[in-house]
Image (tube, rainbow, N blue to C red; front, side, top):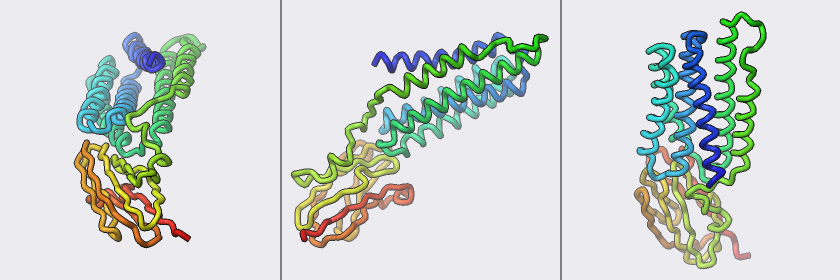
Length: 281
């Protein structure tokens, strides 16, 4: 928990550094550069906030979307205010778009990819912050008479590296971290627990034995309704967000069966699971 708090403090410090820099040297930064800064910071804050919050709270998709949009909007306004109204407007729109895209990215990702996604987003956020800082330095040094770099980026680069190293060694726990394909693939009591999110089933591959009664239990962890359909076996389990439903079935014939979510466009989005009924031979 202390490490997570430290990471939050570092990322806020990096962002605050950039915003304060813009306010202190706004007369030396062109309006065009100011618009770029506002758009970039609004977008990356909305995107990263949306991704993280939707992973932490996958069942509150609407609320997390609104929060992420507001975060991006606020940062866009604050970042663009020193330069012009146009810069603030650009920051607002970029922040709103970033928040929407971030939450969509989070809910559409499979739980087993959460860690990789968070690591990618952390690296992307830190890299974007550093590039914005380099842009600020470049603009300031154009105005200064000295030919040397007025503000060497070593200190900021050090903080960025600290953030990346700290985040990449952090053991992130998600609400769905209990999901383990291997542990649910073939339970001893023939109860198969399935998890549905936007837009994926877990586990992805389920091996079972023929002529055994199997109970599929579908837990909907997403923000939309989902179902679990195996047409050849007559299985159809429907769930609303936050609910659970079950159905038992006996597979008499070995083979490979495909389970899908039959709601419009959900199969195409990736809600597919393979049921492998192995031969007794």
